[in-house]
Image (tube, rainbow over all chains, first blue to last red):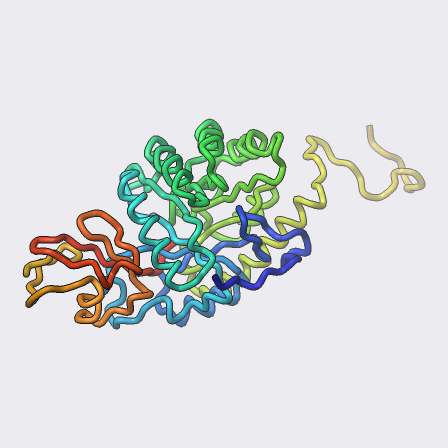
Length: 284
Length: 66
């Protein structure tokens, strides 16, 4: 089976992201949906400097009115493909979709054949995950040898259950898919990180969904998550390629700020210049 | 022989393997996955898998998604 080129350093200068048996030079995973054209998608993915992209599994001939296949625009030597089960509302449909995704990627000799981004949705208005269906499908897919990356809500207890069920990574939503609301509950993300990394510091937690702009990505990374998965924030921006550049910088900035260790927040000021030797009198 | 393909009924003449069907539909075998009656049929079985009257198929490929 062909391999995607492995880099030993990320663009943010730290260790690469290890997701199961895959090593990624970028901590940004980008979706391939919603672009006005496949050419624009291609340019945006390049600007984002991602090495891993998600793809959906859909009925043949229903995907592009002009009959183009996305595979003609994604170099399988450059990008590790991550098939998703988006649009599935039952564990059973998610299992069928995951198996079909694996079958297609095996035919392409892309190493992404051994993993899946699992989505089992609970309702079509919020696109929030169904935690019961997600857990059921995780157990079954793990038993079938898949490395399962679980889209989930930001509930720490569900996250822990998914990890216990054998998920390769847990991917809490910052806010609903495509909503652009950013990270609505950073405290829950913190607790998830604490729970899942307590005795297993390298266990991957990825923020998946909800990102609206670059500062959301930086904020997620500053919390200590291992990466961010996003789609709409780039694809539906007024200038997707420029936004993709911004997302790359945000991933790097957020990761570096996390590694650097931020100062604590304080209620009162602390002067940057020495108090000693200042002329004049200081008020009480 | 009548088959349901991706939710649509279509008629075909004579015996047909999955490989024959993909050929008639002009689909690239390595870019699709095929399910017959809810069961995934791996690519290496396409040549010898004979389709039968009333079989329900899903033929899928990859598309843009997040």
